[in-house]
Amino acid sequence: MRRVVASFLLISCFAPQVIAFQARGAATKPAISACSLLSRELAMKVSVGVNKLIFDMKPEEEKVGNGTACEYADIGLQVDVLTPERIAAIPADPKTMKEWVAVAGVGDRAYFRNNKNLFAELIGSVGVHTFTIQMGVPTQGTAEGIKPNVIELANAIVPRLR
Image (cartoon, rainbow, N blue to C red):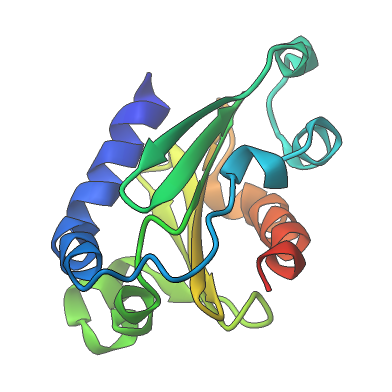
């Protein structure tokens, strides 16, 4: 439930840009299913969740704007919910740059943040596609501690977005 709330908070930060993108009729890129990028094996490899039995459950996918979102155990993945322009604008916005830190070597551009030590979040772009990852921080853990897992997941899906 807290992942759903966090996703809505993340989306609400960028909602005006998403609406503007949709209004321009930018549905020219092929739709990508977020859950098709998040295989059971990949999710189990990068997950920091203790109970691996949760991966026996089928992930849930939903349409969000022009994109899709997939919830799988302690991982949330969104594809094409944000615009590449919105992600490119992050360095120019002093408010967002206080929260988001640039991550080199992930897609065309990517940014990471600690969301109240509840979630480690990464947003990025690859060509015309964008993605967001939210990974739950385990009890007694830190977002910084699971940052390598989030980056590993991002690097695994980036080639499939090209």
